Image 1 (cartoon, rainbow, N blue to C red):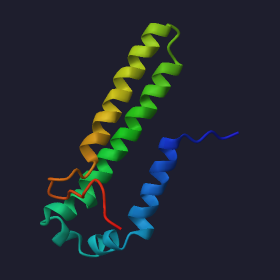
Image 2 (cartoon, helix red, strand yellow; image 1 turned 90 degrees about the vertical axis):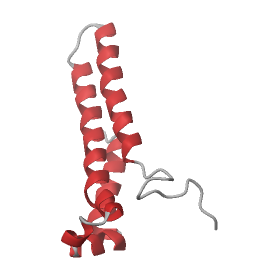
Image 3 (spheres, one colour; image 1 turned 135 degrees about the horizontal axis):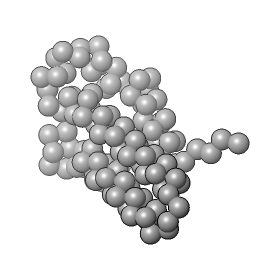
Length: 109
């Protein structure tokens, strides 16, 4: 039986958007050199995906380290540190309002 976490599903959905679905990413990939000169395009093309992949890796490392630890307190500390790093990386990769690639928190319909 294969267990897939919600983080893994988000990773798969994000990669599908990055490579197949998003017309913005298709345009960025078509003109990658020009996109590197534009801070907003560079955020989406490189910074966002790299930071989110780092967050997923940190969460998986924490889960593996905790699984291999016998002591409950040590397990909690390892999970806290790795999940804390993953959470920090996710917050850094979100396009908050006011950033160069920022988006509004709530969009009008």
